[in-house]
Length: 297
Image (cartoon, rainbow, N blue to C red; front, top):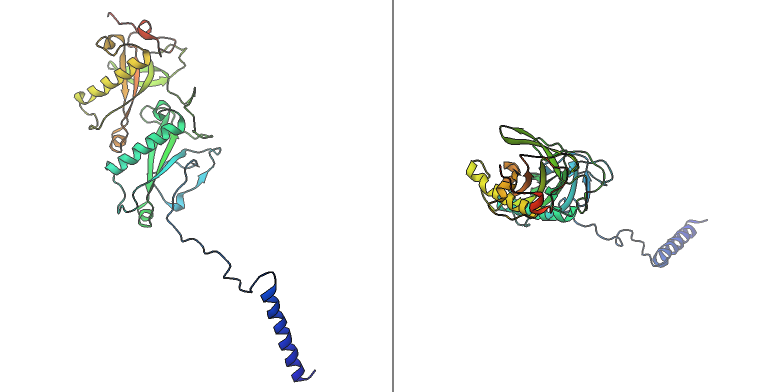
């Protein structure tokens, strides 16, 4: 084939190929202009309703974030994720109104999540924040995390658990605080050990009293409102008048959160009735005056 013929053939083939590209199923031959644009990268925000194998940390970085299904053994469950104002320049400091507000929202959300005040169980609520580098990148979230404890007494340890805490306190539950047996020393209750209410015991959890804004109790006078608040909770639980005779019916044990938790806004005080002169083998919930009579000595 001569040079002229080869040129004609090559031109004809190019024309056919170009014509085919333009008319085949509506494609125009441009492989880039039909793709949707990728979204702009945004700041990292954790999820709610997932769990973490690792223990709770005050701040969470993207490279340490490893959510798992709550059926997997874990230490932390995220029950809610809230947000600080987007224009806030600095992370909220411990004791700040913003962090107390975040804890208050987490408190409400956690109670709704488990089906009762989370303090009625062996649970701890904590608030995690972005790292400083995460904050600088635009993260403004706060994470509401629940963990199961082996006890609500001092030196409590976080347990590894399986299964979600959703609705865990809606009904009877092994997590619930109930009847307790005391260890005493110096005329005071030192420790509480959970027992079945059919077993002889001298203490029973009666509920939570929420303290108004006030300094953490350090002096004897600071404790007076806590004892008064828990006595009112005790009276409602048992069904006896909240009057001067209540002191003669039962003692009371108060367990406020620690000073650090108090600063971040946890003002829920766990309240227990205390029978310093006897033991019982049943719950005193709703027992009334007959179940908690006035002591004469």
